Length: 225
Image (cartoon, rainbow, N blue to C red):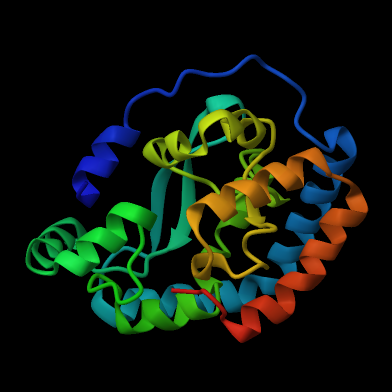
């Protein structure tokens, strides 16, 4: 499936599951709001610098919002600093048409280790996960949490099978168990297992551990591309 087909697929409304309180309840939400506000204050100079880097690298958009599935099946725009060329759909379609091995990799993971769409600035942002910092605004809006399963698109959720219900119980996270356990170096089935384990075993202490583990995971860049 090409990126344009993926976007079209995601434009469909996803049937919401029965409304249920998100894991962690009010306490987790209070932590998210407090940490997000503090993070924006502390990181505002860095956010401005990164925005200028993206803008002046090729003159395109600074922020990219991709349609993702949130808690209880609600669709939201997951914000990122733009790391790809503006005509990414066409570039990807052309590349996959002439690279069968990459086509297989894309079909299996929806990612490419050597993605032709990624800009020079974008490659650095992705390596250090800095492209995901705008998701702090998603956290403030209640669409995401600091810790949880990474947000997915519609056709990815079908890969969860019966475990999809666990994904839908939690707000997607800026970081999560998969993020600190190898990311793209592990299979998608393993990612699903991580998300289920996180939801089934949630505790505030578990969230704090994942946040702490995120620091070395980001600096090591393992599985980040």
